Length: 261
Image 1 (cartoon, one colour):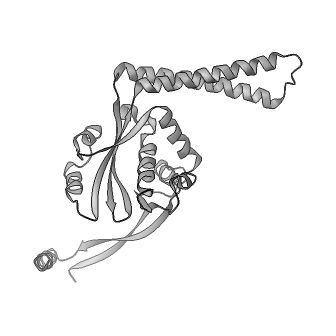
Image 2 (cartoon, rainbow, N blue to C red):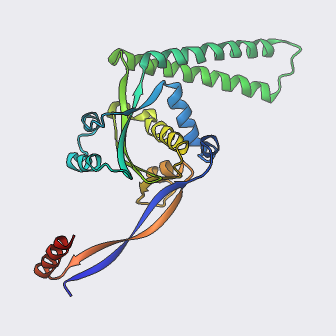
Image 3 (tube, helix red, strand yellow):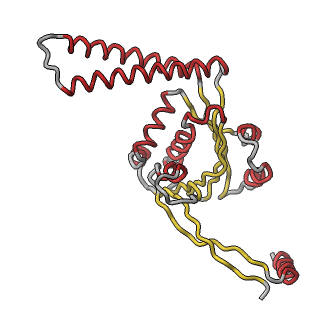
């Protein structure tokens, strides 16, 4: 024998659904839906790069394998094709969104205060809790405006904060290489990018969305929590690798097989 084959276990997270986008969204966990909503409130939008230019992708993360990405993009056929999507944040609109939310909440907070100050009003626990929650939201919205203003100071125009490369294979979507603006990586662009892609391709008849491998089934693991948040399941499969015992014979057989192709 010139080669010994060993098996290693791989786990991947896959969302399979024939539901509508709205029905599929309901399958997401509460954290994923919250982060998608938050990304929209922060005026993050998703768009497809029609030129499939990898420069911006690499600029966001220069640790990505340039040659590997080129091979993926260059391999386009009738069945397989690749696409790049970007997440962009508009700081000015981000500020305006939260100013609007803040104004509405301040009006609600004032009304709650008036009710509580009314001597005849019953000071129920529910009323007190509503006032405390309103106070919390006002503080949160003010903090978001500060964040948005800081971004606007540095990036007065829209700025790309994330990107992802996907592969379409028949009726399946593979989420491949992903990159972030390190300075703005806490803005949940990855949640929104994946949701917009899922929503788009569900309407085009795609039913399988492959989120890739996970290293751990630990429910405290960030990668596990993120991928499982989209309502998928874990599939465990066996992979193969070759332990070459006779290198000379192995390469001869490899050459012969290549010539037969």
